[in-house]
Length: 90
Image (cartoon, rainbow, N blue to C red; front, side):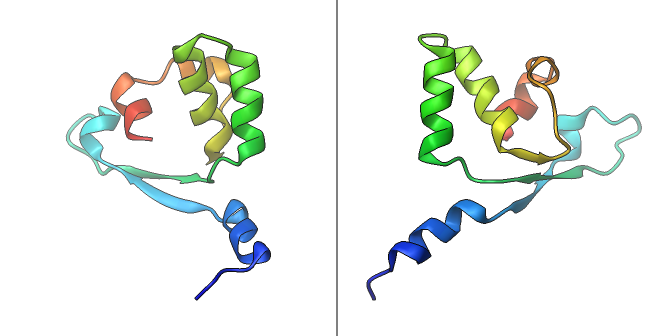
């Protein structure tokens, strides 16, 4: 089945609930993990990120996480303070 342009573009409006494992969150006493809501990045997002980050791969990665994270929303400075394991998982 061939997709229509509308069907392809609709994917950019989706959100996904992602379960973070407890061991990534450093919860005391082995508490439960948690959830975040992510959205897919669009070509426009990637173009902006590429322009803003230039040749800085770490800034590019942080901007990707920041732009895709719907809930909870984080500022770029907060994203750069995430534990590496959480950022990598996202």
